[in-house]
Structure formats: structure tokens, C-alpha cells
Image (cartoon, rainbow over all chains, first blue to last red):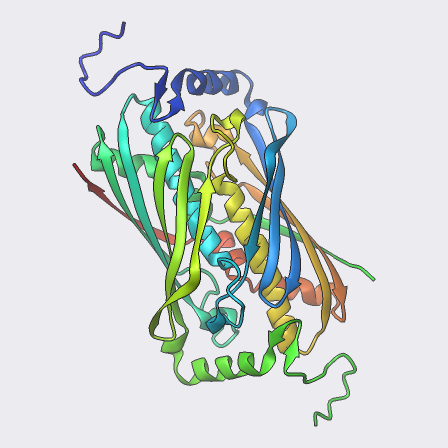
Length: 191
Length: 191
């Protein structure tokens, strides 16, 4: 039994739906053998027409093995009519917000579980600003991407707001957007 | 009639599935009234349990109006078993690659259309590296997000590889990932 005096801490195997025993084991395994933590995630995309294209996600690499999801995840991306599309899918910048939302949420649930903090509910909202003058080459001083993203979390559970602020910032997508990522592009012309 | 001597240039109304007449009109309208180009994109997210949460995308703002998609787009995010989830959806960092793929593809199709360059096929692959020592707080010098993303395009059409390289870099998601975005986070504790 844990004899800690912090009333909100417990030591269950499962907390917030996270297997804390396995989480702790994963951390120890990667501490001892950092190569186990090298993951590669992938997507492939096929253009249909106009703003419509289809992304597929199936394989990834981790713990020194090639892995695949239970089944491929397939996403239609399109643009709404105002952006000259048919609206047959979310648009690509919206996918980024969906990814940010999933990542900040999961990071909060996992890290809270690792600290023994029980969470009952997490709801969040995301809004990002894009000035089309960037994409459309109207003004070279305007960036094409998000200028700013605002996030609002509403959290119910044994965790204070400052800890939520701390934990959501550990999110890989939060870091991916907040800090520059090098993207290498190779182009092959096919006949 | 256009009297240009460049053989790959034509002036159709529709090219690459893009209504070039409307694209040109949109650019002129925003040049005259930049506020029309201020867009806001949104997502909201509700945590289920563990690594499973659900993002919904429905409304956005553009051309000084509130707008909504034909229907909401709903995305389950989860983690694969090796990352302690149930694999009931792509994981959040994979959503980012899906968004990047859709954005680079659409940006290429639209900008090529704007230049009168006909494209027949666009296929692309994305792979990004994540070192779990960042997310898991094992090494504070390791970033939680993508260290690098590699992209491979295969393009068929009346466009050369250098122009593809130029155009895909105009993508809003390419810029969002390549350069820092400010993210403001507000947290409300609810009972």
C-alpha cells in the first residue's frame, strides 16, 4: 500500500482508462534502451480532383518493429464551397486542429494518470486564424499558415488548472506546431 | 483569346478541377478588401477514456460570415496497443500528417491551376520521426513533437519538379509546421 499523504493520489493499475503499470513499464524500458522510443508515423495521399484528396494511414514503426493499425484509417480532405471545393471532407487546416485537440487531450489523460490524478471529463475548443492573403500570394509578408491558435479546456476531476496548463503543453502536436519542424520534400516527375 | 506563346498555358474556366475564374475572382476580391480573407477554423473535442477522444468540426468563419460545413466531420482519435490504446482511430500525430498531405496536395492543384498548368496525378508519402523520450519526460533535451518529416511526391502532368517544389511550399499546413505558431491555452476547472 502507498502511504503518501496526498489525498488525491492513488496507485491503481488503471486510471483515466490508462494502464499505469504498463505506462511505468514503458518509461523504464525506454530509459534503459532509448532506441525503443524511436517511432515513425506515416501517411500517404492520393489526389482526386480540385480540393479533394484521400489520405490513408496504416503502418508505423516503433519499439524497433514495423507495425500496422488494426485496419487502415482513410480520410477525405476537401474544401468548402467558399474555398472552391465540394465540402466532401474537413479541410487540411481543420485536420491539424483535430490532431492538436486529440493530442492535448490524450497527453493530459496519460500524464495525469502517471501522477495519480483522476480526471472525469475533458472538453476543449480550438480556433485558429488564417489570412488567405498568404496562401493566395497577395501579400508576401502574410504567412500562409495559422497566425495564432486559441484553445479552451474545461476539465472536471482531481486536478487543478495550473497542472492542466502544464500537462497539455507536453503534447507532441502542441510542440510540433509551437516550434519549427524541418520538412524535406522530394519530387519525382512521372510519365 | 490568350495569345501567350507558352505551350503549356491555357485559359480554361476549370483546370485540375479548380474553377480558375472563381479563383481569380477570389484573389481580386481579397486584394480589394483584405478582410474578406480573414478565416477562422475550429474544432472541438470530447475525451472518452484513455487515448480515445472525439473531435468534431462543423463551423468556420470567412468572408466576414459565420459558415458551416454541409454536415459535421467527426474524428475518433486513439492510440495503438503499443501506445496503450485500443486503436479505434488514427493517433493525433498521424492526423497532422493527414492534414499536411491534404494541404500540400490541394495547394499544388490550386496554384498549378492558377498558372494554367494541367496536372493528371498527385501521389505523396509522409514519414515523421518522434522520439518518445520527449513526451514521456525521460530526457528534457528531446522535443515531444516531430523532429523531422520527409515527404515524397510523385506528380504526372504538364509541370516540372522544380515548380512542384515551389508550389507545395505555399501550403498553409507546411508553413504551420515549418514555422512557430503561437498557441494560447485557457483552462477552466468545472465541478
